[in-house]
Length: 319
Ligand code: PBG
Image 1 (cartoon, protein in one colour):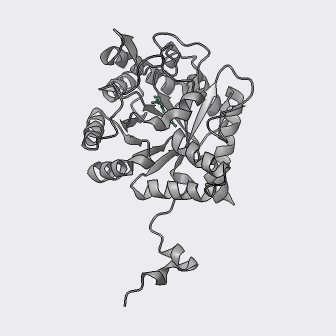
Image 2: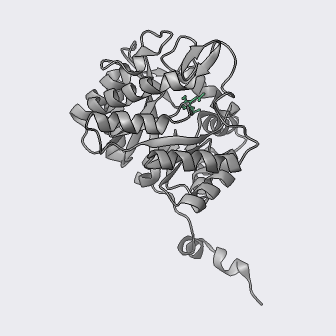
Image 3: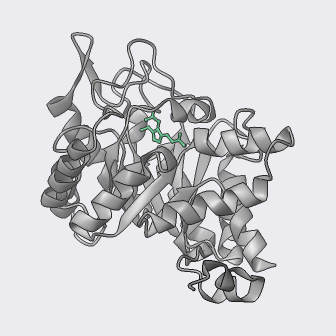
């Protein structure tokens, strides 16, 4: 008689485990606000801070010591305008942050989130024409932003605005300026998700009208995700992302099986804050839920996970 329970004893369970999450798999999202002198707490994301340029550099040093291999930067500019100029200003907040990090830390990979939404007064991910996000007019601005980020020291650029043809525009702009070796991590299959709620407080990137369903994907669609990813790969994406992660594990698996590319999944703010909120109330074991969630995302096929738990997980792994 086959007894599946034989291998479920503590020591055996460990050696037959199929999936292991390591700090090496994790990318820590960080918020940097150029108006701040010291970090402030993000109320909607317990345990996360909005950093000043100085506290950000220190945080990255700590992450390096804990063995977290990469960070992704989100900027909060002093001023926003209609055309999101902060995104491509050589002295913009993410550009200054990348420069500052590179002064003190050598090994941590700096990924720059590349989008206009944190820099536009209306909060949308592109230029507005006739009350709509104008795709093609936005593309050159994304190219400019990528070049300024690479010039400031960003190791990877990560376009998150879901504009059609954005990867090609960015690849072309980077190559024209000699940044042929700067990889693109494309937010290829990004859904119009309510799980981004806490992020919009963290990054002050709420929008003043409409919503993002005109450019982000419908949660109902899976085959469309394969198209989105295929197009981004054809346009030159080096790594591709599915976002959010846990409600979209089927998409992570499909994308990994179909393309076999380096695949990232973003465990977004709402996924994080749901666990934190339930744990605060004593309804679930927060640490175990963290481990289980990350394991599930990796098991579904993610090679890397963008997660607000990166530091906590690495600290736990560190002992
Ligand atoms: C914006 C962007 C968003 C997130 C990352 N980049 C918000 C959005 O698209 O509305 C969400 C991340 C999170 O919720 O943790 N381009």
